[in-house]
Length: 552
Image (cartoon, rainbow, N blue to C red; front, side, top):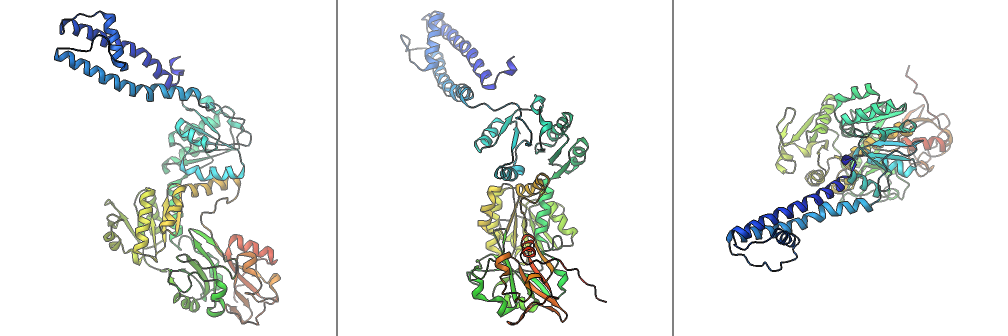
């Protein structure tokens, strides 16, 4: 019966039992002290009254002077004890009791789960996905054990059920009607949750986020549909962002042979490109280079037309013949195409990033404060001497795989100031820190929540609902509705966000077009843009993919 009472109630009952005992104890000691030390006997009732007055700090009646030193010491200690008890009683015993009596109580059972997604425990890994589901209007409920966290989630507008499955398995009654389950607790709690859900007849999708990769197989064995170790998935995303060998920057570039390339340029504030409109720069006409888009705070933004401005400090992506791209290098500082990739931080994420980069034969320099096997530079990333020893300025990319977001923001600002032209990719724990990292100078910031959100949204919604890394692609398409138009004057960029960068005809592949050039029906056009932009182009211009004809 006592175990069913709330903790605040048990505390209050204990207080009500202990206070009379304390008053009786102090009263008895006072009675003995008055009799044997002061020579002024007092009755037990009188002494208990004195103890009550002392502990409550309400003052004394007749007894206000004592002669014996031990009696004075005892009285002083009793007075300080009374002050201590007053300050202890209200915040620890009384206030929690009344807060629990008057606050809205959390439900202790699941709602009708038809169509619902159940999250077992809340964490940063599921935060981004929960926000996406909330915006999409998809019903979900969070099963949480910690009441303080549950109150915070309820204040954010989430539906929360509070309880401990190990003490009350009935919390999962009705779970068999849920649409999907996602568990992000400790691994042993994940296993218990999976088994309990399957025992109750749930036969749908269960996604588990494991902390230890060795626990993936056991989780799958007890009933999980898919299991991901999010630190390793995040590491893979960081490595793919840093190395073109792992994740080519533009898919399908090989179709154009060696004549056409893609280049990244960081636009410094003093560059003649900074702040200018594309229409005024006329990079196509003057340099034979097509701007595909800009990376702004980790988001790829295709040009919307000639009024699009090139922002300072962004990474500009351009396509064209190599000799033409070289001309643009004199206008904006290029990103180093070669050089080591520096990985800062050798925890679980940094270790996996370095492992993947080395497996891809990338020259990798690892920085960490502790000397471990695989660490090349031991030192503090915030110290310029460490940056010099790690050859940061010579790097083709820097990956900050630090475990603390605050340190990551400071390190981002320091590395950006030391090496302004180097691409900087940062790991983020909480989505709220992404904006601060971009403000500090990061080019790309990937959070555990974003990466987990993309994976889980794929399983729950059947689509890529969260775009963590925009992919660029070359598409080889038929002429379609572009016939009779100049490739650069047909409003392609304005209507689709993609761009025509080359035309293949019998005479070969053309990447520069005279003013009177017109697309012919037999031509093949090469269009570059995001996957969404390519799809939009194919719809707008009624173009379909054209197979590559192997030379005889």
